[in-house]
Image (cartoon, helix red, strand yellow):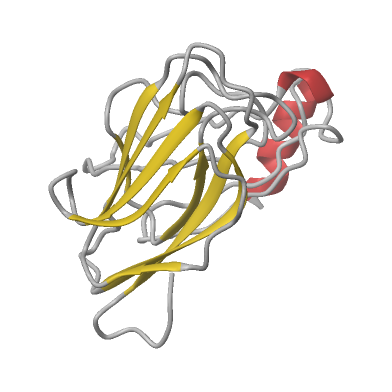
Length: 196
């Protein structure tokens, strides 16, 4: 069994325990969930390692991850951050109990693949003291404005866009005191039976 062989090799090398292996020869979309506080060693987090066979014919692998901890800026290094999964969680980049970072100008383009017929956005946390968040139903800031929140603290109803993309912008002041936002989007596919 390949998984048992890998687990033994990792253990003998003094590496953290192997949580899961996949044979990526198929179009597999799966979540690996690990609690970084209980997964030993707790302070090291999780390592993803991609190994390919010398006979591989090429192809691509796409990883997406979410961590409930402080992130660099808004969770991405280039503007806009592009989110292509069918459903995903994103936020301002602060940990849930930390204030938003100062002087941010962040953008997200939510564009699930393959192309979708609609997207719904549900907020879990909204505390935008010293910040302004805008949600557009389309691929850029010239699209229909769905929600504009400056300094608000109330979670809005679920936002729905009958488009293939959402565009989200966040601006923070020099000394924001709000705890930021966290939201999850769900894609509706043309021939699907539900969302994301």
